[in-house]
Every structure is written in C-alpha cells, then in structure tokens.
Length: 445
Image (tube, rainbow, N blue to C red; front, side):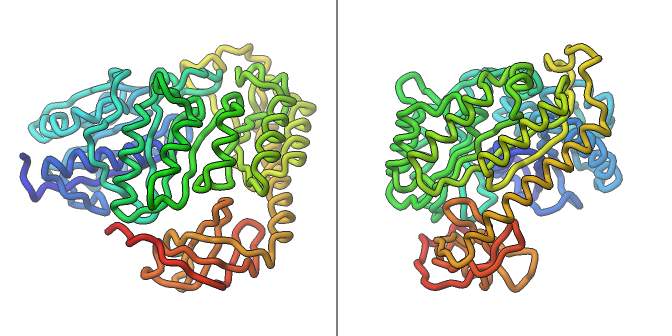
C-alpha cells in the first residue's frame, strides 16, 4: 500500500471511452491508497489520458505537457496514457524528458507498479495489447453523479482507412454479457439511473453467445434503470434483432448517434466504410420506421482525399435529407500509419478548400437543427437534470431524445427527472418550464 497522502490528478482528452478509462484508472489507484484531486498543482501523480484520433488532439497534449513541466512540484511524476501513448510509445519519453510513464489502453492493470517505479526514478513504457483485458475486477471511480459509462467492447476490426483506433486499441473484443449486467446493477445500486454502453462499433458486440440485441434486453431490464443509451454504432450492424430490441425495450432512449462520415459513395469507398450512400439512408429509414420520434446525430468528415465539390454536395444533400438533430463535423486529419496517408498525393484536398467546405457544412447543420427545434416549442419532454449550466442560476438537463434543456434549479435537483414544456430555443439548446416532477433514485455521492 502506498502512502495514503499521495494524490493523483488525471486530465482526460477525447471520447467517452477515455472518460471511462479515466474512471478505471482512478479506481485502481484509489485501491492503492491514492486520493484524487481536481487539479495538477501539488499532485504527486499527474496523468494525461489522451486521444490520437486527430493531429489537433495530440498537439494539445504536447502543449499541455510543456505547461505541466512548469507546474510540477518537486517529486511529482507525469505520465501519458491512452491512445496517443499507444501510438507514440517511447517517442514520448524522448520528446518530453519529464514524462516518466507511457501507458496504452490495455496497460492500466500495471499502473500502480508503473507509478511506484516512476516515483522511484525509473521511466517505463507499457503498450502491449491484451485481447482478454476488460478490467472486470476494477471498481471505477465515477466522475459523473447522474450518468454512467459502461464499456462492453474494446478495439475495432473495421479498419476504416482514415482511422487510428485499430492501431491504438487493437482488435475488437466484447466482454461477457453477465459482466456488463453486473456492472449496470452496481451502477443502479449506487444511485445512478442512466447508463451508456460503450464500444468502438458497439452494435457489433458479440460475446460468443449473445449479440447486441441480447445485451440491450438484458441491461435494459435491470431493475431501477430508467434510461439506456449506447455509442458509437456502425450502420452495417443494425440487424433486425437490434432494431427490434431498441423499439421494444422501454429503457432504450429514442436517440442514436449514427456516423455518416460522407454522403458520397465514392468517398465512402475510399474510406472503407463498407456501406454506400443508399445503404446508409436505408438504415436511417429502418430505424425511423421502428422507433417513432427517433433523434439522429452523426459525424461527418470533409476534405477526405479525392473529395470533389460534387462529392461534398452529395454530403450536404444527405445531411438535409436525413435531418440530423446535430452533427460533429471535422476536416480530414491524416494519421501516420493509416492507409489514407498512402493515397496518391494528387488526391489531397487543399486546406483552404476543406475549411470552406467545413464552414458550409456547419451552416447547413445549424440551419436544419434550428428549424427542427423551433418546431418543437410547446412540446413536453421528460428530462434528467445532469449538471449546473454555464449560467449559475440554471441547470442543464437532457431529454430521452438527447435534447439539451436548461431549467431552473440548483445542485439539489441533480439526478431528478422533470417533465418540462419546451419554451424557448437558441437553435441548439432549449429552455424548459417544469410541469411535473418525479424523484430519481438517490444520487451517488
């Protein structure tokens, strides 16, 4: 057991899977006597849990490492974990002399030993893959008092040509259904009533016996669970069984994040997305036919090598046809080692062209979202109060269909379910007036 006064600070970048991994690391170090703190100043152990999906994310981490070097107290140690650690490995020790640990996503079981070595003056790299690792014996230290992330799948087998994830998180593997159900039961016992199942292509889940439809039905039936979400699915893996489970399990929320990436079949082929424009639209139609009122959000990349103006216009057409409730939009970011970097140089889209397309795409997404949201005014939604809003006198809540609604309240309202009337919108978020209230389970402390 380490010194009970030792402290750890973890700064998290990237996706919900990284947030979940941070919770696992905090839980593992807490079991060894480390106390978490809210900032790096004075912390004995400082970890940056990183993302490698885009170059910008990595540059932010490099800059942050420089800042932390100036903020470190004598005797404190710094480590880099996550996807950037997996991708760069020993290079990080060379680039940043004050970094003592580089730990990939499958190396967190060894974290206490690696920290102990770092505090003794050694430097370590742990970036091997473990295809059996699901951290089942870890007790996560939840960062959110209202919602819980539950990983059910690690790694990815799709290998889209632009994506670094298969290289940083390894091959796809799914945890046992019974283990996911057990974690959901513990979450509810701790007072949390909303769960999000996590996986790189979560709806391709299969533990050897059970598929994703079985998982939705089993976790969705956990007593006391009020809401069940999942992210991120792949359009190819929405089988009839999965869609039926989504429609029939009352706890499954009426929202799906369905990455598009491009509306051009030619670009999708170069991306190796394994579906066409028409097949994506057919998937949307099947989902909406089964689940009335389904909200759909998405991811879109512009400027992928070879994307022509006509290809981009096709993307705009799909965005308008589907009527996404929101979209995460990005310029293509080449990642070393991915097949996209080996495409012919003459396919490169100039940055100024990609930037102009991104701005046009954002304008179309926002205009469509605003128009749809204005049409929702006066409707009622059940919302779960999640956290304080940026305005101190309001709380941020979320509807089942993933609308952000600002309501009056204070910290005492965290974890409450309210029925609200949507009374105003900025175009992206709503204000809501409570018309009824139901108490959630006691909020985890």
